[in-house]
Length: 103
Image (cartoon, rainbow, N blue to C red; front, top):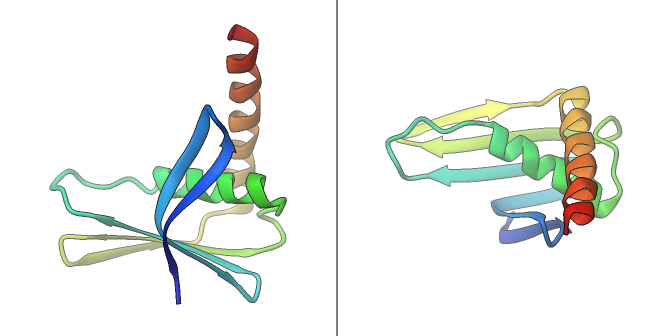
């Protein structure tokens, strides 16, 4: 019951496309499939969570979050802390303002 290839958009300078995403019953799930051999990082999915919260006006404190990476027959699951997502959200907002000023 997940939607695939969903663009998460904060601005023309900050956006990304999640492989699979769902938001039901106040639970945000973002999943990503990695086909390469390089060990995947959860940071990309944390950024997607931050973009989702910024785009749709949610606080990560008010929702449950689960992110998953599927790679090499392995599933890595994380439930990121709200404060970690808020930190990323703040970085996105500040960086976007800086980029706009430089343009």
